[in-house]
Length: 594
Figure 1: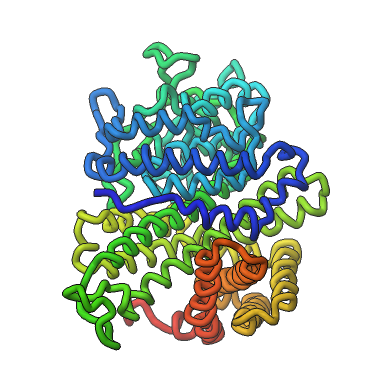
Figure 2 (figure 1 turned 30 degrees about the vertical axis):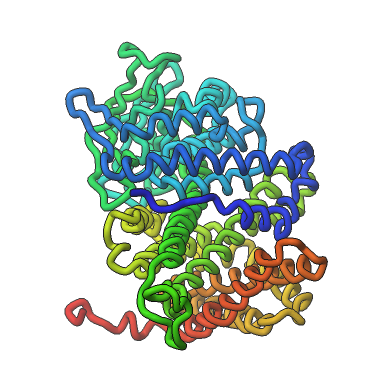
């Protein structure tokens, strides 16, 4: 049985139309025809595909998983995936944000974020096939030659061909400078690639006619380390058609047997002098690959968000029906043998912890997605630069904070259901298994935290962080009459204090910065959530003051803000204390003392 899922379109519209003021599409000429009515139509159709096609394939896909066939070195995906993927591809969802010159629809990246959340809520494993393809298209668009763009992007846009990213090798994960895959020049300008890759998502499957692999390898004259990595496009089939005579010797040699995401083919890949073409400049492959890696990290954050949404909706539906015991203040449903468990404060704590964190994290993700559009398409270069600063700064937070909380929300949902949550009957145990990988792949969350404090905070002299802190401070000043604004100011002060501590102590001792990285990322994620809830509550009050007919919706926003700001946000003070405690309690241990 799949978990429950209904796309939260009213919440999504609130963010796009009110918090983000239409995603600033009115400032971008490229999106001049993206009207609210068009956005609504896109959301409705996207929700339909996810609620029906993707959700229906979710539980069967987990049960069946992928199958490797050693005789043909091929992989078959779960039976139900083929129809769902076809519907997704034929609906044009792969090409939403792609430039029209290559068969795309040139829609805002923000709408792609919405679709990613909905598809991951309904079926995380299946969503990874188009998700990797979209990331590959973005990389090819940004770095490949026009010849490669025109040859590969149109077929990827239709879903006929899919994409992968081939980074990791048996001897290296995060430290890509250790890769051994080689690329030797051919006389015709192509390259012959040899090597082995592991953990390749969508590396082999039967959903599309061709698979376009983006492979990191080293040229014969490559310098050592990450400065010697180049990037190559290596198709499964070299011609226009998937014929045996066109087969390129890039093979799947097996599948990983995983805890979750069982419908996603995670492959071992072997290149046996496979033909590929250089993407970007020689020895600059990692720079180009970061286009896809950053997209993938944001996608993984949305996976964490999506799983938490489905888990919460399932837990809420259960809690509204499950009768167990009486309220501590006396029967609330005296005509029934017991009260529904929503009367119990601890059940409400778990449900509201999920609900308010989900809505804060969705607001953070969409705010980041909006700034991708501004960074890429705004006519003002200063606006583009400021937006890109925010995107770079927030990418590790979206990836790590949303996936940490995705795992927490799934566990809280299991707890809400009790023993039923631990069984397959309600589908949350699958979500808990599926979401667990999101804290690991595309750079573990510990690596994201180190990236935040080691690279993103000091980048350009701390320009992005100063701008963000200033923006939050200005908003708090504007909304100081709002309930709980003081809690947000306290959280901001905690964040500012922690930032100053890092800049002082981290410069003197890198281990001080490293020990503080994970609590700092969480402190920042919670503070951003508090800031966004303050803004959302103010918008809800404004709507009620204007006599909105949706009083229940807006009152729920105000009450949700009160819960988050008073019950969740105070954790920032504890995180600051943890950071200031320094490295000694961690680093004093000798190996034999563990």
